[in-house]
Image (cartoon, rainbow, N blue to C red; front, side, top):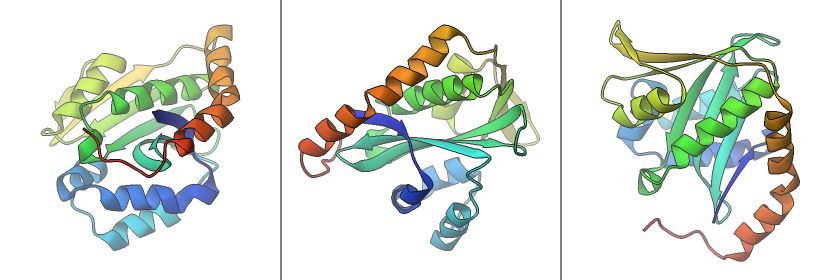
Length: 184
């Protein structure tokens, strides 16, 4: 069972561990270039939680995928998304589900425009972006996609509230399943 939820600043170690488990290719795709363990540490230390939302996919208590939404500045109406999914869990819809969840959260916070920027060889991210954000454009060695988000509706607000209200049960069931397992 995969549990999708926002992570808290106190869970930064789990997020860092997830980023460190990414293969070199997946790290390059996530950070738009090769990054060392020290660079991952620095990235995690620099997260400004007043301008960032991270939604993670937990499998048996371990983060296996995450979407990081960063606002340009506190109170901004524009943001950028970055997605990471560990190799054994790719191709199962985790990245798409994470982006959908973050789009709802962003919309409910009054964010009006989001973008995704990725490397030309990151076909998985391009498929997610094209499906959920819109057409991709190639420029300056990068691929980008943008979406104009509509205002929140009672349905999007209820969707987020429902996600939060079922969280304790989901976490309990996820933990009950035992030790982390490898993807099939």
